[in-house]
Structures are given as structure tokens and as C-alpha cells.
Amino acid sequence: MSHFQIIFFSFLLISLVLLAAFFSCAETALMAVNRYRLRHKARMKKRYAIHLLQLLKRPDRLLGAILIGSTFANVLASSLATLIAFHFWGDNGALLAAFLLTFVILIFAEITPKTLAAIYPDRVSRWVLYPIHLVLKLLYPMVWFANTISNGFLRCMHIRVGTHSVEPLSREELRSVVYDTTGKISRQYQNMLLSILDLSKLTVDDVMIPRHEIMGIDIEQPWEKMVEQINRIHHEGAPVYRGNVDQLVGVLYVRSVLQPLLAQNTMDNEVLQQLIQPPYFVPEGTPLNIQLAYFQQSHHKMAFVVDEYGEIQGMLTLNDILEEIVGDFTSSVSAGKRIELQPDGSYLTEGTVTVREFNRATEWDLPLRGPRTLNGLIVEYLETLPRSGTAVLIADHPIEIVQVKENRVKLARIFPKRV
Image 1 (cartoon, rainbow, N blue to C red):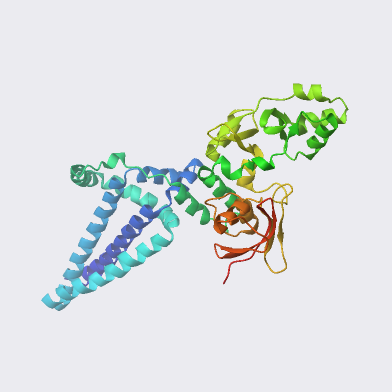
Image 2 (image 1 turned 180 degrees about the vertical axis):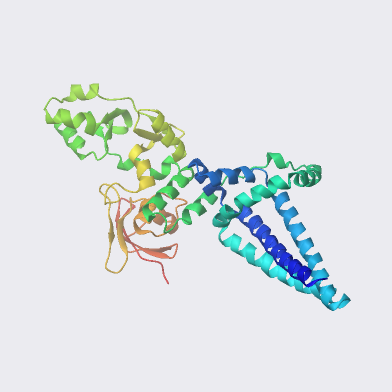
């Protein structure tokens, strides 16, 4: 073997190792690239993303081209290394070349390029896209032949490559994606996205205004009393009833209709009854995302939640659902309710506050399964009627009953978790 041949074969050997490294890098990068980010780029008319998606539609062809190229590079490199070593050291050199080349290929053509591609799959995939596309065209006959045989074996196992598609993300997987955006989007937007994903878990019972807290208009009261009731309404709509909410007549949209008329002194009992609209009822247990769709499809902005016997259990407005997604529209938890931070780190709160409202305001984690309100939660754990001064431990949070009214917890102090 001449001096020129040795130099040429050595240069060719190094080139083949680099080529094997390229194919290893391309294989890992193209298989690890973020498909959802790629689709987003394709919708933005990025040419490289469109070409990449076309390649990834048939992973059998893509992998066929890469592995054929990689195999040929490794086999030819092994043959050249053996030839050069045999020239210098004879039979013993051939064995030595096998060991040395195995180590070189493992480090420089496998581990290093694949690690690089796994860390930066998006960048590397853009770099290898067009060379791989060219290799696929040049080796297409060989790729077709190899894929025909391998796909035939897969069909024997009832696997059809042509019908393969990327599985959509589940709701929990989407939650993980949103959690991974920490630092990329604001905490507020992240919470909104998580709340939207949780809508299907919640029902109207979780966010409705309980029956005993419904503020409405009793049309059997004198007109002056009715005006006072109208002025106390905090929602856009108000239920109208006779005597109590069980005798529901309908709904009045206070801000958009009543307040302008009252300001002009043109409102009286007779005009008010003409403005009443029929009530809208929903069964308890209705998922919140379905109820939101109902609100979107109809002109109603308020619904009354009824049980299996048709009795009203609570009231739900469109704003209640929106607040579940974007947070409270006001600084207070809700009208007339208190959650006050105390100097010792505890919270003084009313028993009518829902557990979800308390957790959202404090970022604590009192149990959500079971009773909706703090009063119900405390009574469930006590298993007896509450008394002032009684304490209970719930989810490692010491809770002291401060005030009781009509056998219900009116005021409670909730302390941070015990360390």
C-alpha cells in the first residue's frame, strides 16, 4: 500500500466516522423534535417546519434512509480501519483496529452526537433537514426495498405504518405542558389555562351561590322595600319571587334595565312585573364546561340549580364561571364575605365562604372533596354540632371555631400547616 493510499484511506476513514455521527445526530433530533411546536411553525408558513412535517409523516422511510446511511458508513469505516491496521501490524493489527474503532464510533459517532441532538432537537433538526431529504431521494430504491420487507413483518403483528399518527395530549398531559411554561408566561395566564382545563372536573354545585345566600326581589313587599332590595343586588340579574325563592317568578336584569328606570323615577310595581323574564333551570351536577356552553348558546346569563325534586339549591351566573377561570373581579372574595389575614399568619374567615374560594385566596390546600363551604367542612370533621372555642385539625391546618350562629359556624380562624 503506497503512502498516498494510506493518507487517502485515513482521510476517508475519518470522513466515514463523521458521516456516521451525522446520521446518529439526525436520527435522535428528528425523532425528538417537538411535533406541536413544529405544527405551530408550519401554521406560520415556516418552510423548514412544513418540510419536517412531511418527512415525519412516514417515519419508516425517514428511519430507513438514516439507518441505511449509518450502517454503510460504519461497515465501510470498519473495513478501512482493518485494512490500514493490517498493513502496519498484520493479523494482530486487524484485531486491534476492531477494538479501537468500536471505542471511536461509540464515543464520537453515537454517544456525543445523540446527546447533542437530544439536548437541542429543534436546532439540530433544522440543520440536518435538507441533507437527510437529499439522502432519502438518493437512496429511495434501497429505502423502498428495506421498508417493504420490514413493514411486511409489522403487518404480521397487525401494525400498519401508513395509518400511524401522533396521539393527542390528554388533559393531564396538557396540564403538565402548562406547568412547564413557568417563567415563559405570567402566573396569572398560567392559572387561567389550568382553570380552563379543570372546568370539566367542576360542576355547577362547586361555584353556585347557595340557596340561603341568594339575594332577590320579593314582589309581595311594599314598593319601598322592593327598591331597597334592588339596591342591594350585586349581580346583573336578580331573582324575583313571591315570599321566598321557592316561589320563583322570574329574573330581572337590574343594571341594564332597572337602574336607568329608577333614576328617571318611571319604575313602579306594574312596570317591574312587565320586565320579568322567565327563569332558566339546570340540574345539579351539570359539568361547568357544559353549562358555559349553554350560556354561550342562549341569551341567559343566570341559571337556578335544582335537585332531582325540582327544588332550588342555588343560583349560578355567567360571571361565576368566568371568575372561576380568570379569578375574582373584585378584591374581596365575594359580597359580604371576609377572609382576613391576621398578624400571626392565620386567617379569620366566615363559615359561608366556600373551600374553593378560601384556597384560591390563600393558596392553601384544604380538601375540596366533600362539603362546599368551610362551615360544612368543619362540621363534617367534628361529626357534631359546632361550639365556639372548639378546634379541629383538617389537612394539617388547625382550625378554631370563633363564633357560632344557629348551629352553623359563623366565624373561624384557620392557621397555617403544622411544621
